[in-house]
Length: 510
Image 1 (cartoon, helix red, strand yellow):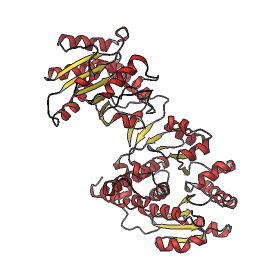
Image 2 (cartoon, one colour):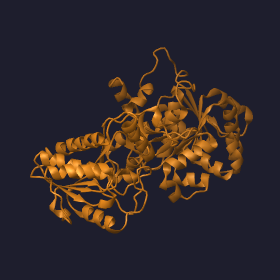
Image 3 (cartoon, one colour):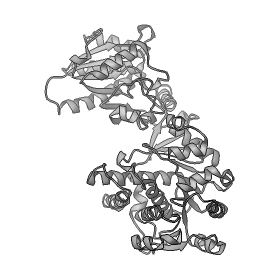
Image 4 (cartoon, helix red, strand yellow):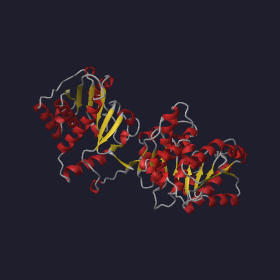
């Protein structure tokens, strides 16, 4: 898992490096500038024609980075100029010194330049500390820059993007490349900041994690391909029971598609056996679609329910199950038993809708349960508007997970997973083609399959495993898009590509 930071955490890390490690701020600034120039020059080598570069700099340390970038490019022979956009009276000590150094090297400083005259524009106006609307002359400046046809580079984060939430503060710089320093900021992964940042490069400038920098902010992570390594291989002496048994309580009459998709997802991510507890009317279609799965009639007979419950290692509850009154009692029975036994549950779709309408069911939700709401379902669970939830998805997921002491997978264009401790994982895999019917059902199955592979709490944290499952789901969607394009993608295209992802992991020996 790759560490992600909030703005406050980054400031603490920066301060620790300067004060406790003894590396001067100007040295870090110089390293940041050199790393940015490296990325820019790599681009220039692939671009024909002479470069004319404008570095637009604010009065804070982000502006100091921009000044240093202009100076280095100028000394490398480029036509580079500085525009000071900030208030001179508010310049930090480091920015004042950087400007003095640039003047000593005769780097041109221009006033009111025409952005249309430049081939490259560097944004070093605000940095990660912005927490207010961009107004007045700053808004006009960013608007003019955005209209220019130049290649655009943001220093650390595009000006106008909230470093924690990805929110656009009225207007933001539209970057083609963002070079961020030490650690990726959450706002560069969450929309719309992720879209505004363009390609993001995280550059090592000598700031590292240290216990002394701990803040009260929650820990943030990003899953990587290496986090799927535990799924890539099977023990040679294992059997179908060894690799886990999933019970999918899903599919009311006429809704066998949801049951099919979640079951296929479970098989694809490694479950050894899958049983579908569903309406009797779905038996023949499901046995035709998925003969590998066992079928059990979803009656209210407690002996039958106990037999299926005792058989499984992981439960999926909800896809296509329906909203009938009698369904509440069945779901409550399974949730109560799983809560008592700490058996893992993925609660999805109609299971979530029933939970929102029957608050008494919350008493059976605990650390063994993964809730997988999309924004609409999350709004019904929490009473918040979709706009409120989207404004800070990490906070929304973490608050529910902490309050209910469960795992919350909040599905959106950028899915956020959080656990009972409030730690959160921001997912970067996936694409718009996955916004299709049944994609969520497939995810619930993939999560259940992942849960089968490690079934003791000492082996892996449930939230971390859920984040790995979300990442795998997105990677499979990305591979489907590579093969067939995003337009017309179906949920079946996603689970069909899971094995290819895992096969790739094995071949790479990660």
